[in-house]
Length: 213
Image: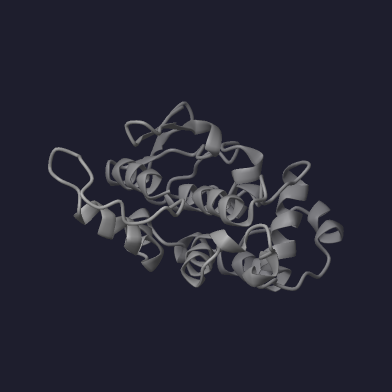
């Protein structure tokens, strides 16, 4: 996950949105400990205040902005997708938001993040919701992330993991962590500690941790 953030941090620093971050577009060489973010077919240069196509990203990893047809999105779209991957990883639920179509996808998100927060987001950005959503959404209360912790996944969950997840999976794209900010989150302190013990030739002096970060 930390290596994926490094890839996103680099492409965002180059002014590029990937727009299709998902597990199938991540290749890992475990032997060499290398990660590659692939399939840049939907990537686009970001220009402030420009409207972009919302028909991007794979359904389970689409940010709410795409599902409500908000075209002035930015790099934070990739951070939502990464948050979905993190949720799948720590809760062992793939995909975490499993919508049957784009309408149902937003409903699945609202059942976790709540409808009050969704409507607040829509008001802030003056977004007109498709009338078909009104009956589908209903009234949903925000769930606490701890509700998804079970015996099978509790070894993967920590307060730091839940805090990072909470700061990625936000309706409001402006409130999500950037890739740079996410890399500095306490969840990754063990990884940063390990990397600080890595020689310049790439060999590991201290393995540090076996967590899936």
